[in-house]
Amino acid sequence: MRNAFARTITALAKEDLRIVLLSGDIGNRMFDEFKGLFPNRFYNCGVAEANMTGVAAGLALSGFRPVTYTIAPFNTYRCFEQIRLDLCYHNLPVVVAGVGGGLSYAGLGATHHSCEDIACLRALPNMSVLCPGDAVEVELLLTEAVRGPGPSYLRLGKKNEPVLHQTRPDLTIGKAIVLRDGADVMILNTGNTLPEAMGAAEILSACGISAGVASVHTVKPLDLDLLTKCFGTCSLVVTMEEHGSAGGLGGAVAEWLVDTRLTRDDNRAPLLRLNTGEHFLSACGNQKSARESCGLSAATAAKSIAARLG
Amino acid sequence: MLGTTDQTLATMRAAAKDIRRQAVRMSHRSRAAHLGSAMSCVDILAAAYWGVMRIDPTAPDDPDRDRFILSKGHAASALFAALALRGFFPQSVLEEYAQPACHLEEHPTPKAAPGVEAATGSLGHGLPIGAGMALGARIAGRPTRVFVLMSDGEQNEGSVWEAAMFIGGQKLTNICAIIDFNRWQATGRSCEVLALEPLADKWRAFGWNVAEVDGHDVGALALAMSGLPDPSGKPLAIVAHTVKGKGVSFMEDDNNWHYRIPNEDELARALAELEGA
Image 1 (tube, rainbow over the protein chains, first blue to last red):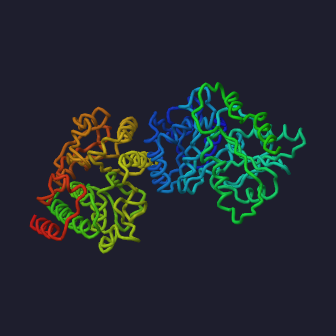
Image 2 (spheres, chains in turn cyan, red):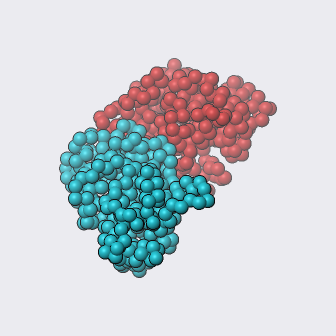
Image 3 (cartoon, rainbow over the protein chains, first blue to last red):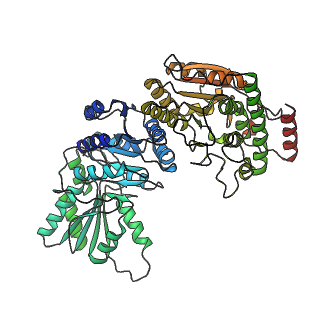
């Protein structure tokens, strides 16, 4: 995903002279082409995320379209108040790009995990929360996000993730993409676990369970039409994300579900939330083994879903 | 550049007097705190808005304009009074300050009024935002200069020093950080709460040129601010030595006026003193 990000932001900057890329001292060599083409529109802001976010606000207040880029936990938690006040309060067109979302850097330890970022950013007024499921979605979401009108958080994975979209889909912020239909189960996945969600659906199908997958690339604003449809027609709806149990996609869907429960005889589908739980993960090895231990691999997810269906 | 002619000096002094009178009335009327902090930076505002900045109140969105950011947002009353007096909006709007349905709140909100460049109130945000504006002006080749007014207590915030390093590193010469050094923060002497001194040396160590001036001498302030862009290729920090509550004898250097609100008697005495000044 990060290579798709670098390629896309370079292509966009050729067309839109307002784009300025701010990096928090990462992306070594990744932005060489960008720097070569636009030396006065790339700034390494050092390991100083609060300042980088404020600088982005000042640039946006001067008519630019800045993008801040560093590792997800540092570009969110470290500068949360700058995101809240400088970007969201002013409602400025700034893209906060976090690379290594979720457990991408599982082996680096919990300092480098971001399993609360969706919850934090989703809580902010004016903020859009975008979690691409593959490189194609990175390109399309980033293209939309730099157009504004307000701030957005782009939660990236790392590199060499499988590409799920064989053709370029029509992508609109706030509208999920159904990758496969399913009559019994709909897996609503956000972000980089999309290949695992697809794998889980395959496994379930092989067991005679009709399982669909939607890439909910936008956690905020939520695609309410899709929620209404799948909770009305499926036997089970599953949320899947490399994020903690509080406040992520599962939390957002649960809030919606409660807010729209208008009668006692609400017979909509139950919700199963697959996530990383609510603890700091330690000794979890690489991303693959971390997913397995959290129940977010294709096999473990399929097992949980099948068990829930009974 | 406007020079500090006798006429300009008189204009700046008259503006400062009017701003102080307004600030006292606004605090009293709205029962809004932070009057001491507002009074200490009035002369800085007067020098900036009447002696230095290239601004046109009838074109507040001119992309080439100079920017002023009140990073010490709790002195909003002084900023609003200055902007109204300078002609950005009618002075009658000040009557509604901090009242329900009025956009002039106790800290500046986004687009609170024409002339307000950024919402502030949480300390340590103004200098990074100002750095972005200064960088944007350099990228776009605009003549904009950016003035950021901070408090001495605000120097506690790490983001101030992140921005100081960024600006120094980028060699932005179109930005000026002004520190209203009134020697008090909310609950104590700013030099005792944290290791603030030597403040000017700190800024020098971060790659800035530093001017130390009497923060109530509008002529000296205007002269220092007019040094932008600094020919040395460094950003400019002005350490303005001020007195909290300046202009009203019973408020001066009394930190109770960080939060106190003048009663009827105090209002009358304050206005009388300011009139006679």
